[in-house]
Length: 132
Image (cartoon, rainbow, N blue to C red; front, side, top):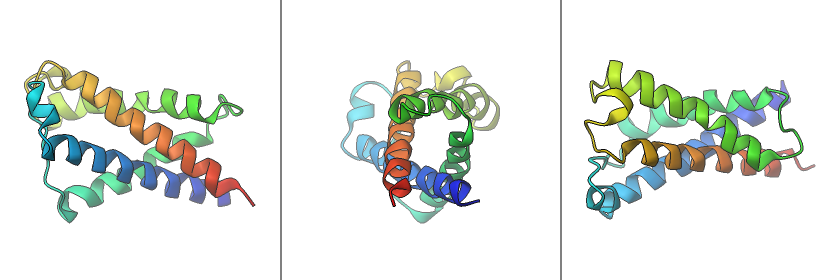
């Protein structure tokens, strides 16, 4: 049970890092300068569900793969929420086209990068939270 709590909390920390990165890229015009219309407001309504979902995705770290390579594990596991975002959320729920291409042609690369931030931040939080 302790491991699951650590994984959920670490996933939430990773989601906060991811969300702040997404927001900063929008706020400073980085995404827009590359033709991608992703610039969310930094608000509780936007942030809260992302942190909860990040915690739930953090439970993937229970999978017994790449145990000794936690950062690589984070990078690999980040592909799961990436796939859901690109092939479920954007086309079916947000109506932004397959892989979010209606938002911009580089959208898939940004989603991969932003979720990599989640995976690595989650792995680092697990590493830090697991020390006694």
